Length: 250
Image (cartoon, rainbow, N blue to C red; front, top):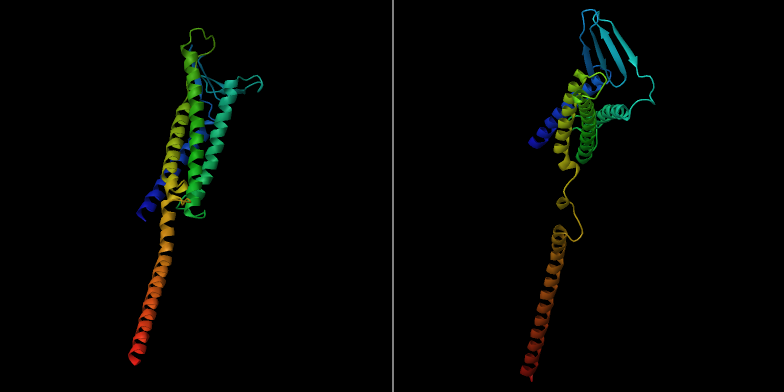
């Protein structure tokens, strides 16, 4: 009972961690501050430029912000396409991880047997890990691209800084990975039992069972053999007694 309680609270903690991580990852999708640059000129010409997966924005010193989506999807680089795909994959897998974990946790009692619930929770933990790694790869790759462009003296374009969305995404991805690891650790023993716990033909347990079933047969055979010997001894004694009585009569 104590072990079940510990597992239940661990699953709740892992689920809450993954849920907050997934919310943080989802919040970075519409956030424009993936990268930004400051153009510090005079008071009248200063402006800030920032961009994300979907659009570029420009904000002047008056507070007016103008955003423009990318002109053509086919003209985008493979880097931007892969980052989009990984971010959407992180959001989708995190959603399905939440559904699986809610069904399989011990405190919800929505599933079937203990083994079935553990397997569903294990699947949810794996899905959360995939979501966390997809997000971590996206944000790390984006940050590394910004760093390479910033330190490259031959890069002629605008040099950007790391935006706030990257740090939020890193935090959410770490929560997803940690929560998924906790769910996997506390459900793997019930979801995937070891081979020593399974009954196989010719195993030691089967041999013991066979020996147990053979004991009544051996006992029955011994009793029959003992009764046969006793009956033969009784008949021999009777014959001897009859022979003695006939001789004595003669």
